[in-house]
Image (cartoon, helix red, strand yellow):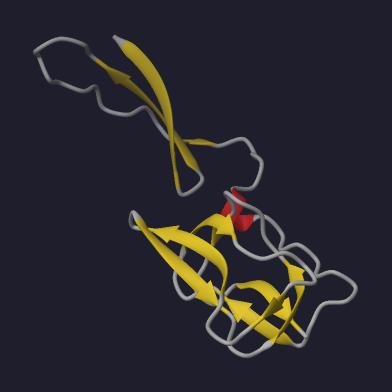
Length: 124
């Protein structure tokens, strides 16, 4: 048998799993309060924009993970140019510049989790 602690919505449960063909699982013990843990990447505080952050926001169109950063601060972009690529449901989705401009800030890093509507970069 193996013992595991599983946390669901902040409540920790101790469970025992029996190995073999029996397929039975012991009933969970009484819930115990989970110890505070580090915030998940999605819940991490948003990074502060660079001092020269622009007024035009480039936002994630869907929830996913930052896969690639296509441009860097100072690069000139045309409307429709990919600035960042996110991965969602095994698809790569380009996040494009909404207008011509210059990249003022990149507010994410590769591997960051992002939510739909989250600001990933700004333009001047």
